[in-house]
Image (tube, rainbow, N blue to C red):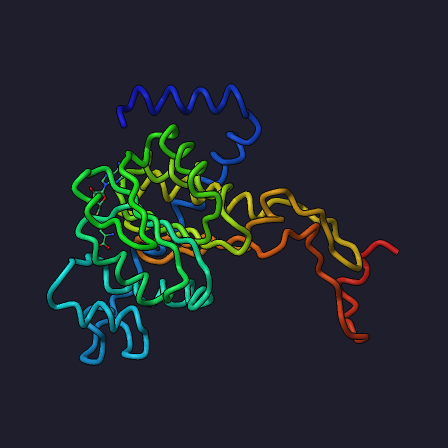
Length: 279
Ligand SMILES: C[S@@+](CC[C@H](N)C(=O)[O-])C[C@H]1O[C@@H](n2cnc3c(N)ncnc32)[C@H](O)[C@@H]1O
């Protein structure tokens, strides 16, 4: 993005949300401290360290990938297979509706079918019309640009239920943001949204996810015997946000929650905090 456009965006956010913008700016020094800690992390290499992460043979996704020596191509970072297995295994054998943005050579669509089972419905999205050839029984292909919000409007009208989204498309932050904004609110309860290939420091999509994490932390419960607060609409639906190298996973709740509470269990308490609690 050009510096002038960047500056204009910054100015706009200060004019429209001044107090939030100041608070965000105030946390910049600690963000920089965290980056320093990560940058200066002690080097630790030994003969037992693994050169590159793989997965174990019990992960069916990894097994599928390893066995794929010929046929339709799959292209994924090896450490993604464990991430996918842990967040998607709950859908195995279920009637699940999964969207993958970025079909390329069609192998990953085959992998999802094999992993999730015959009841799954697969929707592939790609900007390249050549990918239409991967359409098949229970696999529908949509040709379009993931950054085009009009495309998603039409998509949503044709695919009313979405349980899983995998964004492995163009990988540019503006494409990833448009896709998340158009699909995450539309997803079914219990849905899992994954975005691959968030590369590089100061990545704008990573900052966007940082804003979502900040919103998941919203609230300032007062010190009282039982801490509690009403959940914001976002907190009531979003269960968790997970980040791994280059990949983020957002999980929706099966059912919305109304509030967040921190009750105390037990009868024995140190006196040093008791004096601060309201009677
Ligand atoms: C990395 S490849 C996908 C790999 C595949 N998912 C796999 O695991 O083997 C990226 C794909 O995204 C598609 N793509 C690029 N820009 C896009 C956009 N703006 N909208 C939709 N698809 C896009 C490309 O045509 C390409 O097929």
